[in-house]
Image 1 (cartoon, helix red, strand yellow):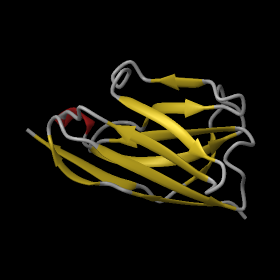
Image 2 (cartoon, one colour):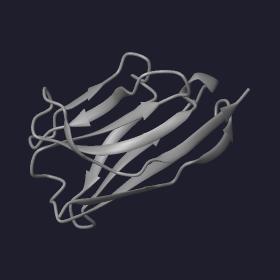
Image 3 (cartoon, one colour):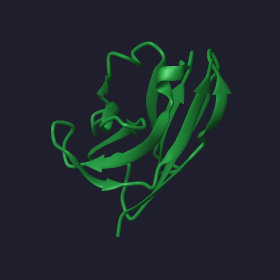
Length: 118
């Protein structure tokens, strides 16, 4: 059974940084596509970043140059390094396992809240 546990969220001022972690069990993070999504209040969930089994990364335009997705195979953990945070980055962040990066998520974590104040 796939189990994803996010951590690392919190409150930070604009311009600050956070690193989110997603510890996976029952699944190997390098096996297929994994990604980070976020959902702000009153908005639809959106894709933030993905990384496939070849290490190819994609980013939403709104986070390019500020966020970096990475994996630690030894720890079987997915990360999202978030720099230069903006108030509009405030959202619940979720990690997910996708069958392919062009498809939808098959498994979700419970989410971790990120709040950026101005």
